[in-house]
Length: 195
Image (cartoon, rainbow, N blue to C red; front, side):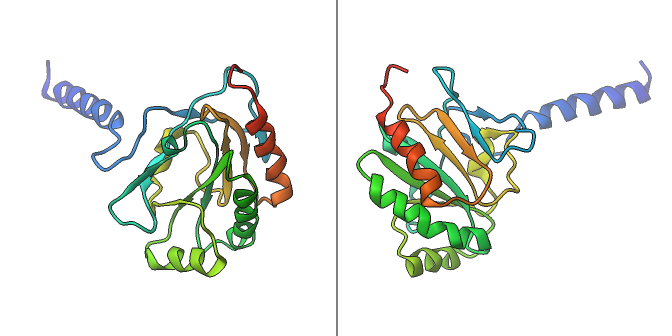
């Protein structure tokens, strides 16, 4: 075997090994959601018993060093909202999410993921100034989103609604109003666990 072939083989092996790694600082939970491009749709519904499970966790925005997870809300509908205080549509959407959170607290939780904010104080002030009381992950690089295979991370805000078994039921790739989200959350909260 020539030196050139040995070098090429070593490069292929090295590339294969590194492409399988998520890195030491990655946060990947026990499940992954494989998102398929929606062909221009901004609202995608997943029905029936074959919904994919999803668990996301990361550092609490207000409590540095503490981890919060969608798994903390067993038996509740979870509304995962990807946002940033720098994002104009997020500023309009946040009070709408708070309204949904307040109206459905017994059955659901809004669970934010703050991305691309490289100072913790800016998103904290954003939430305080708007009276937002739902939990949120602080995740500037978006590592908590590694469980979302194929998901368009550049669309902010976007929202993923999990049913009570924490399976993906609806994805919104757009800014939402309470009137868009509330019927979805209420429908999922009323679903029987057997589904």
